[in-house]
Length: 478
Image (cartoon, rainbow, N blue to C red; front, side, top):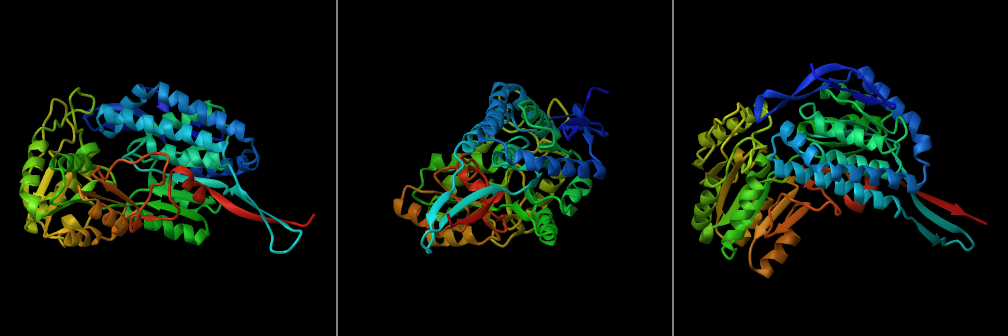
């Protein structure tokens, strides 16, 4: 067996049960072997983070800046290598893997700068002669649980602000894709982090994740993943009276109005619904199309889909890679069958594909003649499956778009400033796109949703301070 990638606890690499990391583009290929942590390992990581917190929380801002900037520089310099690793373990195309790696580097660089921009307020009291200072302080030990679909960007956008604001960290990546997070943690620790400040515990959620949930020494917990697991995180965190932040599911609408530019609408739909194999919480899974453009849009989108190349993630010319694993493929195919049984028309795609290497290849699927109350339009599939809902006009389109328990992102394609302005104001989502794919956001602004999609303060940008710090108000009588 090749070298074992170990867990990182209290400044030391520690052994654990070896687990293979398989390539979904070629299931015969093992990307690497990664150590699974035990519950005792997770408890040791939490203890190490707790011990390291007093000193790290009082480090100078220049030291924090330099560490994050050094890490950012290495990620950017190694973007081709790290992007390839990401594509191998998750199944995104090489271009998408490199793009996500660059995103991680940009996030680290942004929060390196934020270290130097920490600020507070100095105010006069309503009582004469008394001064008031409002400052932000680190929360403490932050537990981080990340998903498999963005294996380097999401860990980066949680770890970077946690460290920037003076917290210590225990991170548990998804068991399915440990490699990218392992590389990121290795880079950050070699950049100069003191022992115990950043700890990595890989392994099963039922073991490592559960230990994080149950520990009274975890002061804040940030989670991205499924709705069901998010609810468990919330329940456990309430019991511990800790801060928690949840990013969960989405059933995102892309509205296409009669006056939309057809080429723009088709590209928004194809990109948002099918790229990254549709495995994005921001994917456009519901295409809400007004009747005047419906037939032209469906025909043009079908033509665009027919030109997409689904193949090995590292193969030149691939537009879409495989589904991440057998379990996710089974779920995708199950929802395709459910949609058919409910009376939706499978207009194109949805077939298993064979390629030169054994992998989880699925042809993107497009359903038409669907109703808003069908399960295909209510539940998150998390795969390359999208459905068209035909509506009469803008008013009905807005109503259908908002008719969901989720509220992460929402889009509209239109050339009408009136409709674009109204939609931005009245869409019940945390992020709204006009003539852009619903998937694809900037790293320096807030990320998050409403309703069942998110809970707690926003992620990314300066809004990250709301979760990773606590506010203190101090009064002084000279």
